[in-house]
Image (cartoon, rainbow, N blue to C red; front, top):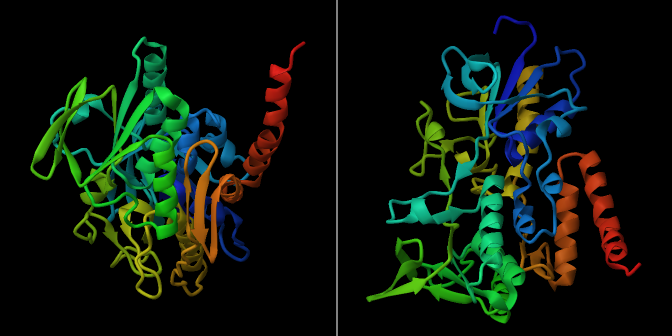
Length: 404
């Protein structure tokens, strides 16, 4: 760039991108030209993904879990651009954008953060793209709510739901749907591995299995889906094949990087993620950083940083610091990831939490999960607004239901 004011472009407004932008806006620039910080995302709202399940059960509202970027960034000085990233020219240091209002445009950068996140892979499975529904975005949640509403209003006796994938997302979604549908629901989790939550601590896995069993949710382990139609799924268990009637199929299996990241002229691992050093710089590029689902991040000890919200939270602080260090002539810091445990919502009245020597389950874990995530909301203004709403909503509901 020829402008004396450096520009930091952050591509992607998920946990990695948004929190990097906010942290950068808080760092001191005395004695240096303050940079222009530009956050680019194709959507207009940030999504606090761990609470997406609460949207389906209407425990929370859209404004709570998905506030607009312009609202979150109002007092930060960060510029928000709603646009799709179509390409990146590393030689000319320009990002090509497709903006609904401005059309195609090139955005120059001095420092670049690639935090475009991942997507749920959809294999070439018969019927999946026509009849399967993912659960990763706000749009996915809206589609699911609409389908559930139609099924609940229909005269069908039982609502049959198949959830493919017994990882964190599949288990949390099944538990929430179990509570929403109650005795009318017929829910099954289909997992090709030997058990659900294979990467989870034993305590969490046992609590989740007990909760799912209490809600009458079936577990089909060592089972794969071979076909989906509008009315059924075909399951294969070892040599046995069964056709199961369903009303709704939810696909929650895995994460893959976007085609844009996969096709960048940068070093990748076998999964298509960008290779980075402990400072979160893309290998061979001192002014290009990558974090989140699209990067293979390793910390100062060579430990692989998980592609979770917790991992992105921690990476964002280091990413912001190291960009600031680049522009102010200070030494960069290697990322030091600290595993803080994990939390799972297990319906509308329970959860499980383990980490840092603490193990909780039931309503206490549900409250702890909410408070931890409230603290993780991106700005104190949003924390305050949502926190007050949580405190006053029970009173409002009671007044609404109180006989006049």
